[in-house]
Length: 392
Image (tube, rainbow, N blue to C red; front, side, top):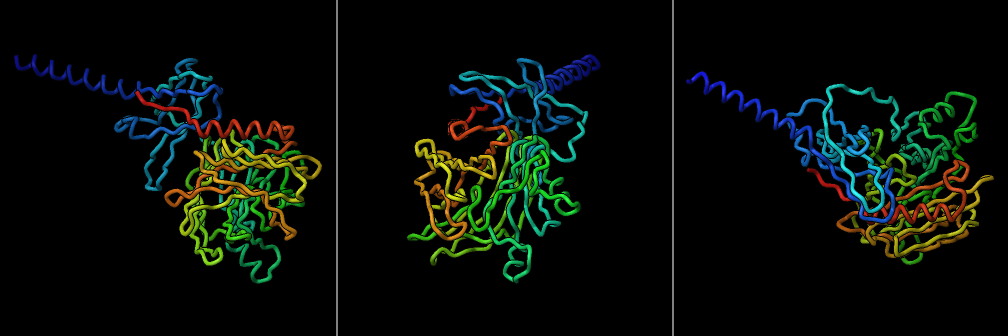
């Protein structure tokens, strides 16, 4: 009798364990699109705590339950404690519809690309740039060594907290290739050999999304970043942090730290800037020769600039979510590189959040200002109406 009881207990334990594993392996992520816009190439984030994956073996694999195909995903440590906090993926979902993704596990590890689609790194071989890119755009900004070279009168330095645009026209990574081309060959990333080029002048302008603080009639700016930290690179997102020395705006001492992220398929980087000492900040777009066309949509929270550029045309833009844009200014001056189109942004709880990026006509992405502004307007609508995500 006792033997039979032990067998029954063992059987029930196996069934219970199997049900538990089945429950883990059959969790579903439901994505709901409540807008009248088809959504794709838009990253959603799922808290790992909601997935209850403790004890599950292998890596997470997502499947689209409608067409039974695997969906690219990426785990991310958002707070730097060494533990993965969120699962990122990009659903494709029609307007006003719902889609279900199944969470499974695989003990087979897929080989990762040596350079992922969304990539960023510190570049000590070119003084001390920090550069980042995805399949559509690339950017860079400048570090303390480049600043010191200017201050010491050494040739080759750069003094700027502006954001440089690298005009790529291919969907594969080019950062490492272009730096090698510039530094180790007779070629130059200032010449287009079919992949694009760096011919976007920044100087002390704000480039594509650098910040400034206006006091009375003057805009004050920080200098180069002082330190950096790469958080992640991957198929869906790259993210990093840049710190800056405190700077002065007519007696206002400002503390600044930027967390910048760039997702697959997006022309705009996300800026999350931690600030102390102010309640508003301005993000700017350089006006270069001041011969472009300005676009403003205060209701949807964006500014854009479309200009002639080196035999082609170029659009830049800033998008501020959740009614965070409190004004704008088309600021022109005769002082070199100081003319910018500014979006004025609220600082809430010590943080200002916005998106900034560009589209180059020669890349084939946007043919004219109307197409560029349409992309920016839809981008803003999506940011302000995020996809709804639940776990079952």
